[in-house]
Length: 69
Image 1 (cartoon, helix red, strand yellow):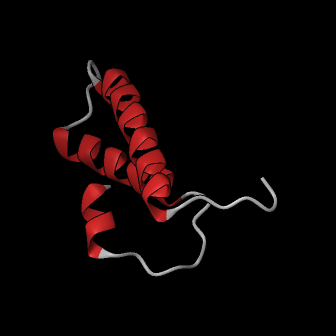
Image 2 (cartoon, one colour):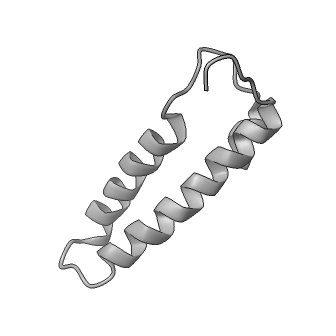
């Protein structure tokens, strides 16, 4: 929303929550596919990066925040 701001801690928590939900959904969809594990890992990695970085403002990330994600 325009004019609102959330703290870094809240931002990291929200991103982690989105990541967990997306990972669960992707794993469920890839469970019975004929794709190799390597291809599945690549798909998961690409999707996770895009989800975690969606709507990022330009700011410095701390190592602690990246570990939490």
